Image 1 (tube, rainbow, N blue to C red):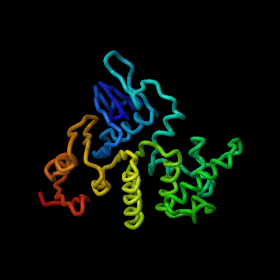
Image 2 (spheres, helix red, strand yellow):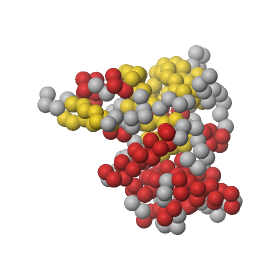
Image 3 (cartoon, rainbow, N blue to C red):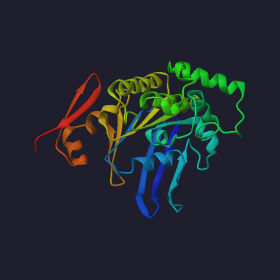
Image 4 (spheres, helix red, strand yellow):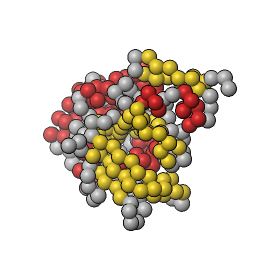
Length: 263
């Protein structure tokens, strides 16, 4: 039986006073690579925060959320099952830290390593193995804040995979990256996919949808407007309507691109 990652049933979710979702039902399973696509404000980040249990739906009859089949989740155990690569987290990383510190911080759920954190030899070995996995050993002793955006992002990828998670969530993974770093991130995503890691991509850029992803969920105004095969999701007419601009769409070697089209 395929393991469930996320099961949302009739979920109503608020961010502050704003209701983002009303009676949202959605499910993701292990081994199923999924892209969550939509314009800014569609609810993509809120869905990500539901998955990582940073926020919870309104408690009411007929509504539920399960993560890996469980309604109650141990956050520390969840962090070992789900890794997250996020440009938002990268922007928060203002601590003075080396590349090794960044990866080690995954063991403590922290930004950087602090005086009260006790790092074991085993943790250092695992962190160094993660650096080696992505061929960034040379970043081990360099200051995070002095690195390029692409180098920083790959350190966060190593951090996200330190526990060999079942799922890695990529939140706009190529945002602010130059073309070389962006393509490297896409290659890293495909490597993880080939190794059996489930990929969940949260994006509003269709070029980030790697060929391994076949299911696309499109969110609009807090509702699922489409959930199905990638080839159907990424049709020009559909995307033009979702993003409120005339678009043409092309596909080469399994990667999609869009361009403006005259009205």
